[in-house]
Figure 1 (cartoon, rainbow, N blue to C red):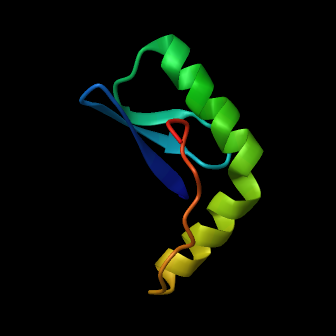
Figure 2: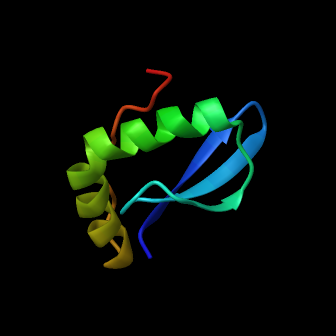
Amino acid sequence: MPHIHADYQGKVAVCSILDGALLAGDMPVNKHKLVVAWIEIHQEYLLADWNLVVNGKKPFPIKGLDQ
């Protein structure tokens, strides 16, 4: 399942790229909502990068929430 790792103040969450669902880890609810919105905005790029990575290629950088 395509997913990302999100880090906030030492807490790491694993979220689905498809729907933003929290798959593992922990994150404050309000911060998770921001991650879900970020995923929605960047979903096309995230899925393209996921396909690159699973095929052994380097992903393109995507600006995070802190940039």
